[in-house]
Length: 219
Image 1 (cartoon, rainbow, N blue to C red):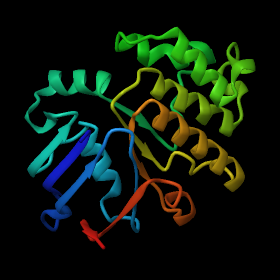
Image 2: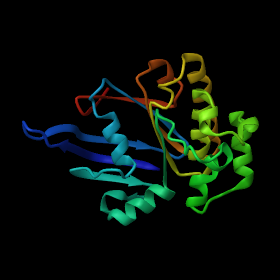
Image 3: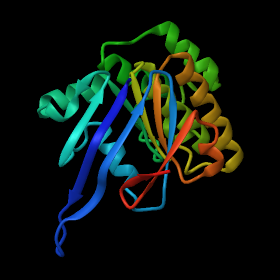
Image 4: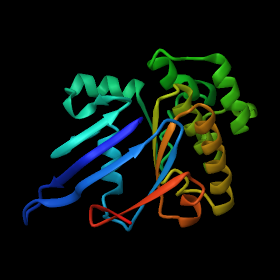
């Protein structure tokens, strides 16, 4: 099991008192498996992704990634974990403006000490961005930027990829193409994928789906 959450709870403070966002959430994600996380706005989807990515800590419960309990890590340990064990793809592409496409793709892999020229070449080919390698982010369309962002995340071959509405800024046809490519690449590299989406159409493309409502997993 690459990702395992057990009885995870999380609340945030407000002027009216603590607001419970996640309530005893339990889920698992195996190597190479894709899981869609759906639910209405405010149901806790993004909070769950932040916890799984080591960007925040739960109030209680355990989160294991690749067999390691990340809730027990200090700030240095969590920074190392985010560099080597998890990749994140956002709705906003977050490419580095001063780097061309080739350097954007290899950036995280080099940072993690996992640069693999053959794997990067395969990613470039599968993503159809071979003609874009010398361009800069501002010279790309939204669909092209998201393909580069996917390539950058997968280049380091993290055991787990978290994607928060990664096709939210794309038209429907482009979203389908980009997600299909992402699913094919993560499956071939045996990378576990947890994807947040509001789209039932996109969720149905993944191996499994779960729904959050009021901070709880519902049938």
